[in-house]
Amino acid sequence: MTDASATPAQPSRSRSLHQTDANTKRRNAKEGRFKALGLGAIGLGLVFLVILMFSIISNGAGAFQQTFLQVPVYLDPAKLDKNGNRDPAEIAKVSTFGYAPLLQQGLLQAITDKGISTDLAKASELKNLISASAPNVVRQQVIANPDLIGQTVTFEVLASSRVDGYLKGRVKRDQIALDKNISVAQLDLTDALVKEGMAVKKFNWDFITGSDASESRAEQAGIGTSMIGSFFMMLVVLFLSLPIGVAASIYLEEFAPQNKFTDLIEVNISNLAAVPSIVFGILGLALFIQFGGGTLGISGLKASAPLVGGLVLTLMTLPTIIISTRAALKAVPPSIRDAALGVGASKMQSIFHHVLPLAMPGILTGTILGLAQALGETAPLLLIGMIGYIATNPPDGLISGFVDPNSAMPAQIYEWAKRADPAYYERAWGGIIILLIFLLSMNIIAILLRRKFERRW
Image (cartoon, rainbow, N blue to C red; front, top):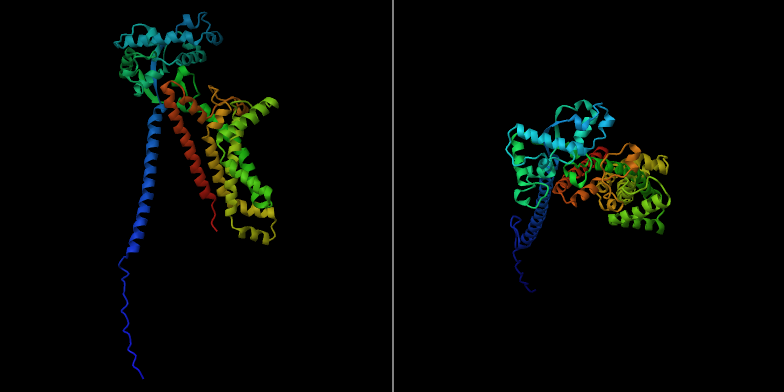
């Protein structure tokens, strides 16, 4: 019998849970670096967002204010109503060229009466202070009320874009040496008119409600008419893309057989969602204007018409709506369909009574976001001629709103941005502010609708 010597057991090396080993330290360091990168990316994005918003607001806020002149004008009967009949038809024969000297003379007389010292001794030298639209404003009021003739009436008219730019800091004294539209003496007079209260800056409602103007009347331009054009285009997009897109989505998701043909359709829908918007503009130009309006002779399909713009944007928006609607239908659990079919409902009833209401939040969200995307598109509108038409008047009625030439907000902003007068550049930024307000409102509506109709299961 041999005695086997027992090997003493090695003491186990115990490790405290409160001590962090090297591997854990390295892992925590990686997680910390990743978190710091994420926070840095978010912070950098917020910085760029603040810079963008500051640039938009600082450059566009001036468009919502405009300089007005208080000008007392003697409405000389010898020039406005030679026969003394006070007949609006005869008074209307006097063009704006007959009212411009009266405005200039009235401003000169007011300067003299207030004792303002100036080197400008002639009434014609005050022409550059007054907007080219001012004579028409006076003319329209006189035609509407012929009894004003023979009286001295104080009119509030727009100042010229150079005077307005000077008071907003856009026009500098050291930059007008070669400017034929304003002089140093006229700027000195502008400062005096401000002190006397004859030149004041007010909120410019006409920018929101008005129409576009010619190159010589930048101070009169507004975005209101193009807003109406965008509204009619969005009506076309809404009433075409929503039913067509939802119907196509329901068929592809619930009824269509799984074969190569439906696979081809699905691939094409996904590809169309990634096609550049200008391609849809070329398609709309060829299909709706050249073929529909030209070859077929359909009167409503013509360049710059909101109907054509709406049809083009509908083609562009349909893939987005179909994809979002199919995703919303897929999100509904199959048990909802099985339960409806189990109690005797038909396939159609299970979809329209149970699946579709549950998918409605996603459908509405996708539709509104698609409309918001279409509202901000510019390239398709350029191809169908919405920048070649200056919309100076709103449409006369519902039908004319769809078929008469008009502009849209993105096209109007693009048109202003490429004009020479700096006042139009300011209005382009102001138009961007209004467009962003519309887009933000549509996104807020999408969020509210999702929360209102959302159901949890």
